[in-house]
Length: 196
Image (tube, rainbow, N blue to C red; front, side):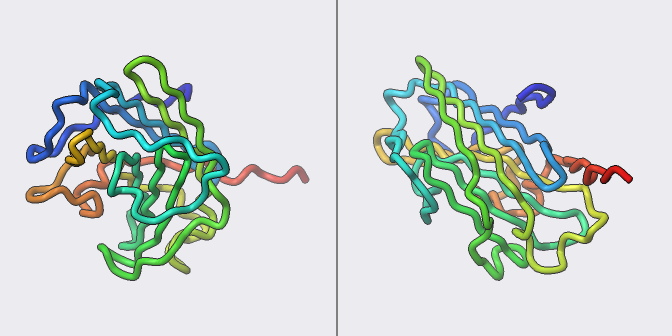
């Protein structure tokens, strides 16, 4: 992803994260309502439970109960937001919320495009997501171009323990939905002009 710098994710202080050396992620606007997300996990992968690739994988729930890459996408002027989950299996999920953990409903009309590469002790996942029509009705005004984003990852070790990684953790238990987690600002490009 040229032009998008990988940002380090930090483990929640209560998370067991011995096998993980580094997790980094980035988000990039690639069209007026599309995002490209990338996650790089460097770890002793033999100590991590990585879901096997599923041919023709599609939407699935509760992906966050195992190793999963996540993004939360909100609007500065709205309490509504999206939760996006991407599994190394190729499965994905998307939900929209009217406000903090309230009004959950399925989101995304178009499946994201996922690409996974595994090399040595490095796992690299990229996802391209079209956001159009995914936010709660009326929450994405026509002129709105700014997004607030939380990037996060759940890692399951071979003992079944989960560690939680994010750009920023609010006080208390791990909570990727918390408003303080939305620490990355991103500007969507304007719609291309039609030639006259």
